[in-house]
Amino acid sequence: MNVHALMTLAVIVVVLATLALTRIAADVIMMAALAFLVIFGILGPGEALAGFANPGVMTIATLYIVAAGLKETGAIQWIAHRLLGQPRHIKQAQLRVLLPASGLSAFMNNTTVVAMFIPAIQEWAQRLKLPPSKLLLPLSYAAILGGTCTLIGTSTNLVVDGLLQTKMGVSLGMFELAWVGGPLLLIGGAFLWLFADRMLPDRQGVLEQLEQAREYSVEVSIEPDGPLPGKTITGAGLRNMTYGYLADIERDGHLMTAVPPDTRLRANDILIFIGAPECARELRRVHGLRPANGDVNKLDIALHRRCLVEAVIGHDFAGLYQTVRESRFRSRFQAVILSISRAGRRLPGKVGDIELQVGDTLLMETTQEFVEQYRHRKDFLLVSALNDSTPPDFRKAPAALAILMSMVLASAFGLLSILEAAFLAAGAMLLTRCLSASKARHYVDLSVLIVIAASFSLGAAMSKTGAASQIAQWLMFADDLSPWLGLALVYMTTVVFTELITNNAAAVLMFPIAMAVAEQLDVNFMPFAIAIMVAASASFMTPLGYQTNLMVMGPGGYRFSDYLRIGAPLSALVAITAIILIPMIWKF
Image (tube, rainbow, N blue to C red; front, side):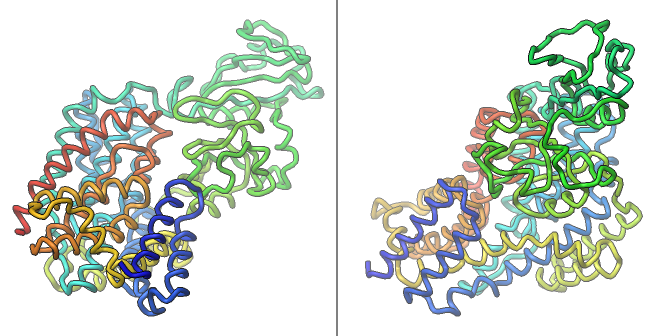
């Protein structure tokens, strides 16, 4: 290998290690790698920046706006409420989740589908007395499997298709992937329907009282000049709360547990309630109570502008693995954390001493502006106000669905390319006022687009310097390696990369390696490209492997072992099916 090939391999190793072992933002890492390749002359500026002009990247950017129109009009909720229905048992309920989630994910972003289904399923499960833990992880997996069925099902498919267009001069049709994605969805969906009930835990959901995934402890104190001192717990109306219960009273530094209902309240008593997030809102309406958290009084926000907000911490949160106090959360976000829930359990102790981790669900007091500012950023995965009074404009839902179907049909029948159809659909969403231009800007995730586009420079450097050919030789450990085994090695390597880094970056890095393997085996490159598409999306074994897996972790009360228990056999089943099917459809 020449010097530039060695430098390229070194850059890739550093990028992989940094993405896997640090919390530096992925777009920062990828842009730093791109700059290194340009500065040291491995790539010219045009070669390094070619990813930003790739049709796959531009298609992804445009589809963000189409998905935003569907979300803002409540089109997914509109469909979900009609399809979920009134199942009589858990098996029927799981089927009613798997079918619409996988179907919708074939035509729009998986993350949008899961984000919109989560609250609908929570409400549905509570009404029907079903455990959400049996439904939410199948929701995530169904969305992933559904995305493998069409070209626009996942951003990974569009990225690889963009590479095929620019590097190999070929492109895929809208439904060409259905030949492999359809069987994968049927087999994977059947596995989930048959075994998810037995393999997933039976835990209470977030809207259930006392033992739900978003269970919090909320502390309030008795105002000395209020009407409550001298009253009993029952007389003060604090015995039969709708969303929580009084667990303890802290009085003069001593903790009173299992307090009887005839206990009389004193001034400055700290009452500790345990319950759902709505419990905090309910307590705010009781005259004579005030938040016991001193930081609440330090917020520079007028009382009439405050609201209660829930947020799930994401990978890019700046204060990860610091305590709430060390992260300077209040001054940084103009918000005060009232309570924290982690993996189905509320965290006891002083909030300021709790170390923040990815997936933690925070109950905060802040302003409605916090929701608008951080809903579309990567500090938090999900942000929602408990008293959100802006429902979707359901009147526009049929128009949004009609635009989506027109885009799909125009591309499927070859009337327009997928990029052209996406441009027209995004414009139609704006013209019909399914969403405003300002909201459209918020929904376009620039950090994801930068990661994808910058990843192209690493792939280009691997091809140009011969590093991809060298890695391909290392993968082909025997001279008489069969194409089937070569395909299996490419598939498994892509799966490992996907678990370490983002699925799109894994696909871009593996593409030149897969093409080199096909060239050295002297076989058709298409089976290897399709294998990368499937392997980069099929991440089921960890909550961190795919964003939708992490999104359902808190609401479903899941633990790491739950993903491994059901995700490992599902991953193996999908891998075996894909490796057998792909060469049968796209011949070697």
